[in-house]
Image (cartoon, rainbow, N blue to C red; front, top):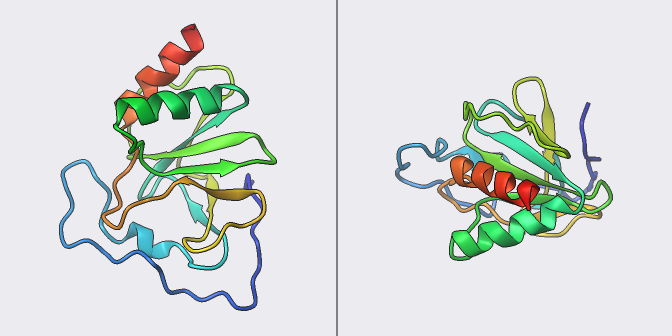
Amino acid sequence: MIPLLMHEDPLADTDTALPAAAAVLPGDLPAGWPLALSRWSARPLAAGQDWDAVRIAGGLAPLVYSLMRQQTCGDPGPVVIDAQMDAHYWLIRTGFTARWDFPGVTLLTNGTWVVLPPTVRQVYRVHWLSCPDAAGHLAHAPLLHATVTGAVAS
């Protein structure tokens, strides 16, 4: 099941506003993953290939986002917000083995799809809260896990 609705746009193109990076740091995604993003329309992409997603719902989501921004000097990694579903989707590296057994938190990996917003315009309901960079860096999974753990405990 696709958690977000795809927005069709007759003027959509497949170009991207994000150029591929020349090199990838250890632990990062292959440089080309941001190229799968559309400039003008939302697009469903399979989790578990280039990235996994952690869905954080409800009142926990803004708290985790605020804490992650503080802990990363304002660069928490790519985060999608779905206002209607009241959830944030954090893109993390695949294979991070920590358990995400928290109320309102779900790991989306192989067999699931996440609709990623366009790079240029904001689509109804879904948009980037924190945009991906051209190199395809992801949210720091261990730090996100520790932040969720702390936020749930508080």
